[in-house]
Length: 450
Image (cartoon, rainbow, N blue to C red; front, side):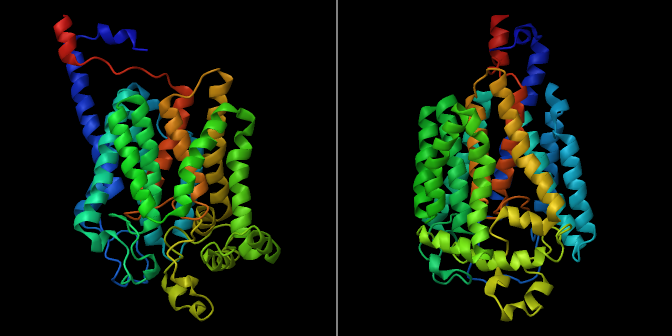
């Protein structure tokens, strides 16, 4: 329902608020597109990548925008009455990121680790700030439509006009076996597939809240692109998450089994099968590749490293493709040293910050959202369309990262999933505590009424 105070706002104050709304809208779109696309989209996979550590090879202008856009969105968001809700729960986030600062300082590559931590912290900040910019659910849908349409449009533009940089080919250095599969402006087909699933959820949300035509266009174009990425897991998860989300919403006592216990079971069978022959045999008998497309070698290498530093880990961007990893002699034993990440975000967190980082992350990723959903149910409220969007993004991400490393990402081309996941985490909390309002009438209409 519309706020009663909206009709009593003086014309001059309404106009000023409208200017803030325009600035906020521009910041929303700019930040969303910068995170989703970056200034340097499209990747040449035929060039041998460096084996050294990398966090950000962008130019100074790109780095400047990485700072200005999140803080610009924050500044605009703090001008709203919701400024006191920013970065909650603060005690948990403070503990988590202070621990990550500590492990970065003691890392063998502290500069790279701190740099990556700074970038991923900006993503977290921006993901929360961007939620304070829309005036209403409908306005949020409009802004999201602009962002997702631009991303999908650029991906198709690449397929049509830049196929060398948008479609995997046999000339790819790392994975020539993916030849013919679409990736758009993303660095890998799996990144493209994950993004298209998330964009599909946005399309459904836009269909339900603002425009059926625009929503259908986004949903159809995203799913069509998804099918051409060859991402079988992502394609199967799109309808599965919609179904699981419906069950999660309607049957509260299944929420813990569907989310936390479901992720734990998937990790047990996936990662566990690489470490335990008995589990591997069970998975194989189920007709599933027990190596999970050769990920098992990567997980074995990762857990060998974790056993050396179980409490502190190695810091962000301080394990894979470091000089110690590449030239330490392990290459004689396994090809997994060529990997750029653990292909499992929960394993990656152990590598980044050890057991304390994993425990704090699990509280943030699972306990806080589940508590928020419980509060909504306890108060007898139903999820709004916005809340349903956040639920689907959250569910998809906690499951898909069992086979990919997307949490705490700081590399261009990979961070859209982490950004939208953080947005969902903060959004779910807002859903549990905030009242939803319709979009206020424009200043011109208020003047006309006067």
